Image (cartoon, rainbow, N blue to C red; front, side):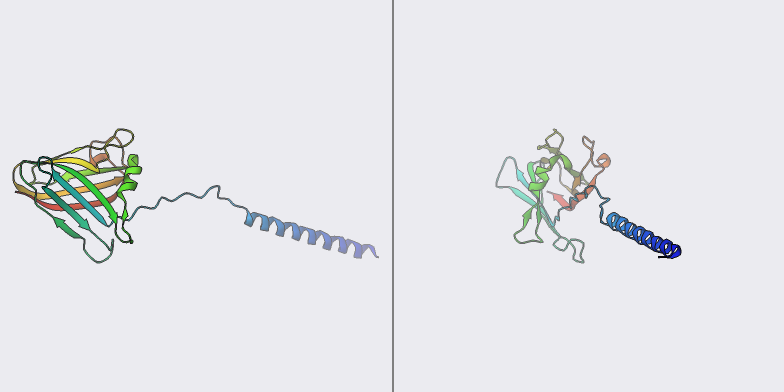
Length: 195
C-alpha cells in the first residue's frame, strides 16, 4: 500500500474513533441525571366545607351551627352559607370541622390539620358590630395555638361578620393574623346576629 493511502486510512480511522467517542460522550451526558433528588410536592388539601359548631357551655342542647359549603371550589357557583343566631351574654365551646366533599366518601381534612398541627393555625376575626371574644383551647406540639377548638363568648346583642381563617405554615408564635404570614388554606366569613 502506498504511503499516501496509508496516511488517508489512518486519518479515516482516527476520524471514526473521534466520532464514536463524541457520540458516546453525548449519549452518556444525555442519559445522566443532573437532578439529585426530585422535590416532594405537598399538595394543598381541597377544603369544600367549613363547619363551626358552637355548644352553649351551660346548656348542651343549645347548639349553633355556622357552615360554608363550596362544592365547586373556584367554579362559577357561589358558596352556600348556613348561619344560626347566637344568644347574648353566653359562652360557647367551639369546634371546627373541615371536609373535602368533592370526593365520595367525604374526606375529613381536620384530621390532617391536627396531625400537621405545627404547620397550621386558625384565626378568628370579629367584625364591627359584634360583641364577641374568643380564646384558643387546643394547641400544637410546640405549645402554640392550633384553634380547631376554642371558646366564644358573646356580649350584648348586635350583628356583623365573624371570619374563620386557616393559615398553612404560619409564623409561630404570632400576635394574630396580621403577623402570621403563611398561606390561607381556608376562609369562611359568616354574617352573624347576636340576639
